[in-house]
Image (cartoon, rainbow, N blue to C red; front, side, top):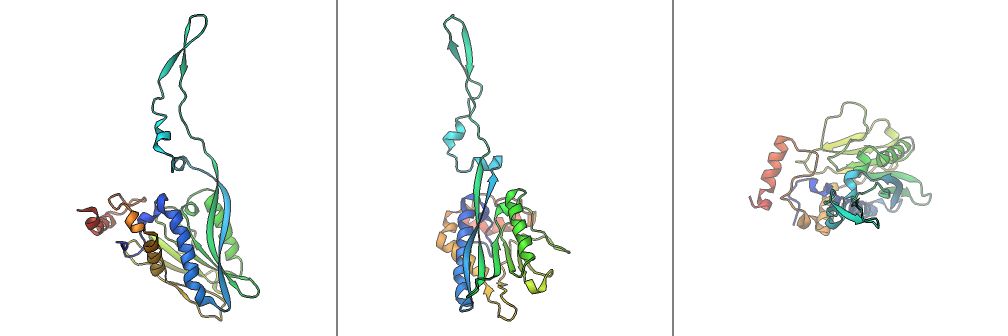
Length: 265
């Protein structure tokens, strides 16, 4: 089953799908462009690791219902007898959850030169934590600044509607998604490919050294292939609302019409 959306499927932003989709997409991009890079370059999947604190709404993700329901009788008390014959009351404890430090691993791609292993281009696919205030965004912004201050190119892929977009200077029109290509030889100028929910995902060039031809990253075809192999479209419940942020009235009407056959409407 193919995705009903012409471009990015917003339902993939659900926690149940995003981590898997992100990993599969990184590997698929690497496998697709690798043959076009030989013999002068190769591409590697790398990992960035940092410690983060879970937000309250994230703590319950993956916890069985039984553990959550254990806190429902919070005001019940039971008698406690003591030797003197007096009766005391022992309040039952509430079941709570405490923030836990978690190790976050985020994958990215590096195009390197054969022979020298010099990093020519970094390809980043943003994750939700990169677009939220906290250590995830700080870690990514620090790395982004280092790349933009280096001789390496940057391809930044933002396929997430939610969160705060990465910093750009100048007049930038609001859009659902953003793809940025930053060539080291042209900084601070960069190319922005912005698009919305109703549009296909654009293909973007993969910059290498200035004298080399730039292969295309055909993100629409790559994303469709990932979704097909992973079976996401069979697993997504399209009867549910599109994940936040809330759609405009016009986009909501468009989504309702698009998904009507799948919802049995």
